[in-house]
Length: 80
Image (cartoon, rainbow, N blue to C red; front, side, top):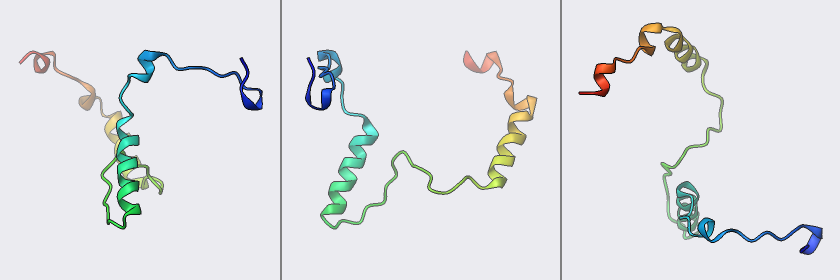
């Protein structure tokens, strides 16, 4: 059946409807509600960078990733 705008209306499955809300969407909703009440909120949520990662961090990440000693995981560590 087509809905308005000629799109097919799709009903979500009951098991999908039963899923809890996405945690970070819920946190954002709560933060927004508090800000609308005039409360000062410091968000420690998921974090969406608004500036590029500094070059020194990218370079350090690349250097660490290229160091083969840092990519070796001891099997013993997993079974202690």
